[in-house]
Amino acid sequence: MKFSLAGKALALAATVTLASCGAGGKATFPINVTVLNVLYPGLVLTTNGMEQTVAPPAKNADGSIPNVTFVFPNQIEYGQTYDVIPKGATATALGAMPAHQSCGAVQFPKNGTAGQLSKIDIYYSCTINAYALSGTIKGLTTTGLVLANGSNSTYTASPVVDANNKPTGADLAFALSAVPYANTYGVTVLTQPTGQTCTVAGGANGTGAGTMDDAAEKANGVTNLVVTCK
Image (cartoon, rainbow, N blue to C red; front, side, top):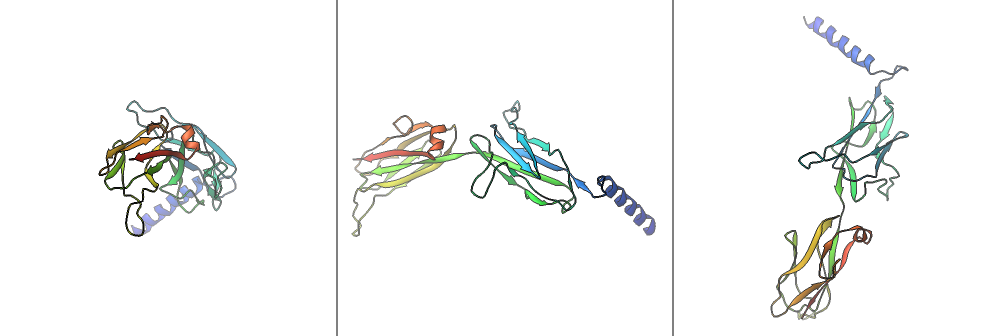
């Protein structure tokens, strides 16, 4: 009985091997790719002289984003290496990314050698780019100041002090949590400092509010917020 089972296993293995072989006798492997959360056009993935443009899919009825799946047109042979990367990517450049998003490989390595695993499955995931929300506090001489961007984040400020621990009123840099592209922001004074009143200026509309748009993206965020305390 043991011999019979072993024989069947060997026959099955031989059938699988033959089915995966190309014309030259080497096993060939398709490169399967799944891309999650792509919302905008522009992503182009490439490997082994092939490239694929990844178009954003239509949203589902419930507003969720379906995955994009594809297979590169040519299979690669056993022992060939692969590296699925955005077109034009280098050590210092992201390559052909979707507008307003950044994508990276997840779950499994994006590169390897055909035959290391039974299948080549590559997963990329995209996120909306987020940009800085920061500025300067002027004239703060007491404690208690708390700034907020809606309900997203807060910043508690303490005045700059000298060697004798006395407040100087010197400028103080601050930063709130980064804001994703196309999201609105509104920086306000959540709590006034003891004995002072602070007001917020700057941002897209001059009062600390606006939408993270293309102009902000190119400038690496909204960095012109000014909080003046008197």
